[in-house]
Image (cartoon, rainbow, N blue to C red; front, side, top):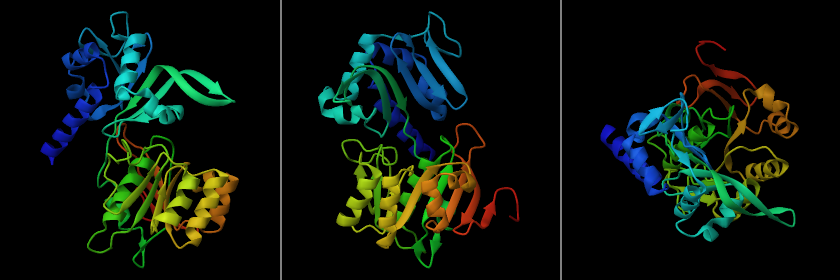
Length: 335
């Protein structure tokens, strides 16, 4: 397992390094950035005429004369406008035009499932974003899978051989999407006790499958069909019409169109896996659209996550059923 993980990390390093101009690559290799930060590295922030920032679970680092430092000064490696021009070319495989639709949405997914957020000068047409050029700010989010992180929870989300409609809740950055990805994989593959299910995944921002040229770079299971870069509401309806899914999975529900599509999904007999921002059922109950789903007992399980350690995904804090009865509370034997 350790050998496999090392090989996977080596592949990720190569995927990330080739996004940078040669002179920046050399400095990063000299500083042994990926060996020293390894599993801690979460993002690389690139800003025009500013120091390259390496964001980890325990804070930020900068590059100074081939060394990793915590504080910036004039000696730190800075990124020029020309560097960013080269990076734009490299990350789009020498054709920004081919990726304009993704870039208009503010991000681009590259080989390996790494997601690059983009900012810069916005050009509008008829009041809508037509183009972002030049691109002057990048946020490279390192793609990581946490396989089997949902294995114990998965076994508790079945009722009479059918998955339960499940809503994952947490504050941003606490692991909802990571856990959702693994549950999708587990339900798709199945196990000795449960048959695998046909999953329809609407991956609006390419965060779950991490698709590159339409192909998921993350493992989302053998029976999963993916609609990449498609709005959740439209995607759910399309999947129902075309792929006959047994389970539909979506990330971060919340608007009116999402709720209508969810109701259509459930009326068709399809099950649902979804996430939402929120730290408790009481908090999401204050949102009128979600309150209706709670009152109608749409979801059979509510899973509330909370991060306890920096750099690790949140752990299950509480589990509730459709009536709001607490089934599990972390560190307590009785709810």
